[in-house]
Image (cartoon, rainbow, N blue to C red; front, side):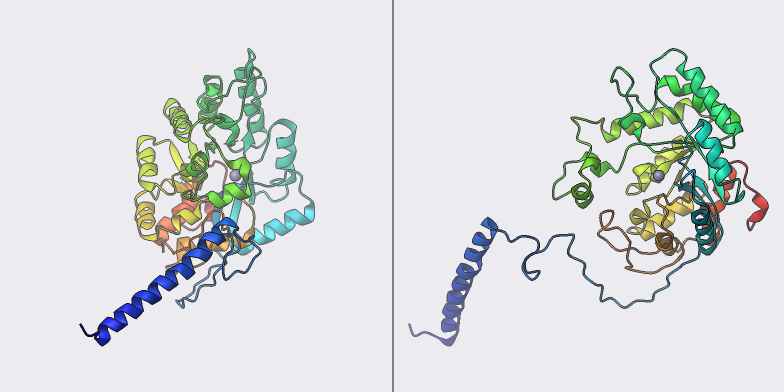
Length: 385
Ligand SMILES: [Zn+2]
């Protein structure tokens, strides 16, 4: 049969395809054996840390550098002995952001706390709120519970307006015998009940992002963070599981219905708001806050908006790390309808942000109304109705 042009073309096409495959596959195999170092030619290979593509998308931009309403930031950490100039700068930055007040969760206890209150709230009475921390040392000794309650009362008298429990409880705190102290340890029951009696909230950080407990493989969304901070990995050989810690925390909520708990960081359910909602439904004494997890909300703007409207009485504003420019991203996610804009920490989020455009009343509750209800001793008249 005479070769048609089509057949000739097909033959040539096959030949080219085979030649291309040989050309493409052989070097690929060789490449896999001696993968160039990350510092090599970026056209061929680079690390996820090096890859920083600039968005070419042109859409309306509405950056926000000052919050629409005054904010009570319930999740902050500051020195108890700040230099006066540094403290003055913090207050200046707070005013620029429209932060009416911040809760310093690193209040320690005893003398440190009393000094800290004097050094910060003493100088700027409306700007700073101090929460006390617990000391778990000697928890195995008789009389620990009474001592812990007495310390809490003293701290309260010295100006503490709440208690902060760090993630160490349940995760790393051990008694003198080396036994892990669970989040719902009965030796702490007296402290939680006393907080309820005094009318002060307990801001509690339990567990960590669930991905820290998962295998550190290519499917892990926090792979980069675990690479940059290997100590953050929580392998099951050395730590309780995520679910174990959440169970203990919920036992605590159930056991102390008259105590107000602020479950920090959306309880690490920012990526599972349905589950967080169910937790809030089950425990009317629990509210939550958004410190360090805005990137979870900024990737699900439509569902998160609906969720915030439904749970508008249950969420407080928190930020965690004091870096004024990062608050701008929080405001933009919460207040605008902007699309595909940058977050500030790649290890938390390799994705872009979208605004929730929260209704004004929801925003007011998130920014200050819910905090005014939960945290005692703040002048309500300083805020819009
Ligand atoms: Zn914190």
